[in-house]
Length: 499
Image (tube, rainbow, N blue to C red; front, side):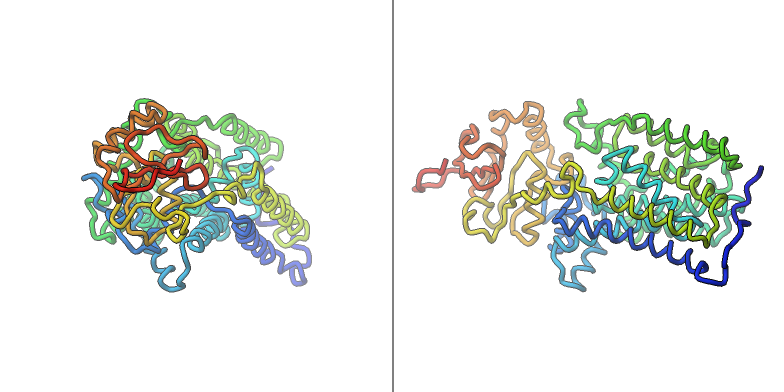
């Protein structure tokens, strides 16, 4: 029996029931805001890029004045994101921590709300998110990182939900303009223009040729517009590719890659969820588009397979595509079984919202509170006098966490960082030194090139227990806090070094 989702009885359509679709929409909006607000209220802070994005916006300085860069970096590849954060800072006066909180709340809310205008039952998206957060535990943490990559995810999810609603019509110029705006805005903010090839390929694999052509055209228009808005179009496009290539190809072993570039298996979720969908379609007699004719299915498959090359393909593309695919099936199921303005629908939506709130906000394995005990190197702390770089100095450290955390707390400090958000952006000789340190698991002798080039205003930071002075010769060492030691060139006529 063919289902007709829009022809269900509407009990008491002129009474209180007519407000139920509005109430469901408000529930979705409410949970999209309450989840991240609850999490940030616990003192949660992400661990990496969200910190440096906020600090850069507060500092108002270009990257060459913040980090030591090699010759291959001339343009900010998060140009739009830093512009937006900078304007928020200038208008509101909020500091780096408030900007991070805004980014966490705003990015997560957009991820949830991107389905609201297109799915007739947006509560289906909440259900899919719960399935994802339970079936793939890192999902919740990824959704709360407060980074512009989440805006890219929200942009392409919007495109796929839009296609799901209008798949029977050929895209016209108005729709192409909308697609171009979504893609262009994403690229201006995030910069990874080349990854938009994935959804384009997915549409062609699903044999949705008219939409595939329209999306490819919009990709070209959006990419060109975003690049022109930066004022350095050629560098913006080429350096994004060069950075990605260097970050992934200059490492002979995956253990030296940052965690999100390391391979990962998506597990059995890629098989179990589509399998459950096929069974549900058969048992419930839902006549829906075959999975192989749905570009979301192909994007999920590509993301899962490429995840064995780099984790971000699965975390940022494959998994979200799989959940969106499930949401579309759930949307059709709810339309065929539950009237749009029934109290049954309101009850189901309330349960989905409650489940989403509990699952995402749960402090499972201390995921939202583990940073509460983090200690920071802060320039205003008088106990750290002499431990931080002097004016015009450089902060050396083999661990990029020193950059993220220290820059976050000292956005106006007058020193630079050698190791920053991407190690391959360093000068070549410094990259070789850092690589040798990491390859040899922090052996003291590997630090010798850095020690030899350090100046009196520079500092080298390493981690060791409070009573274990780093065995790196040529420097005097001072224990600061939180397992962090500061090394500097010996001072003439100075008191003995603290150990």
